[in-house]
Amino acid sequence: MRKVFSILLIGLIAVLFACEKEDGEEVGGQSTASGTSHNTGKNCLNCHQFTAAGSIYNKALSSGFPGAIVKLSSQASGAGTVLGTFTVNKSGSFYTSNSINYGIGIYVSVTGSSGSTKYMSSTIATGACNSCHGSSTSKVWAE
Image (cartoon, rainbow, N blue to C red; front, side):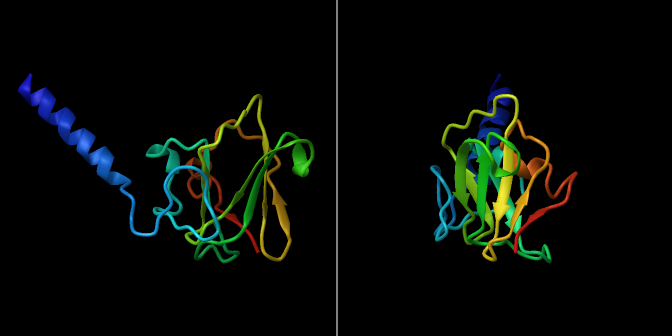
């Protein structure tokens, strides 16, 4: 019994410190243009209780793209009801803890500083953007 307790305690400590806040980082709520975060490109929902989170890169895919705008909409190409609007922070990541109703699927768009908007053609049913992008599909980029 003592061995099981020790293993559980070690696992809990590892989880608590794996996503520890670093100096200047945002915690909870929603990302802001002036904030920072850690582990850009990783699946944020592995550690955090966000409802949507991910990373946006520059066109060369070499670094994050701060200031890009991510929108969730009820219809394709940004049409319908806007369900959420998020600003990518200085680290190239966005996230929110706000409630999002994914229903049977919602659409995503990303707008860069040039005003150019990219639309995801398929719907999403989860906000774990980096669970696919940068892993089984290409990274999301803006310009």
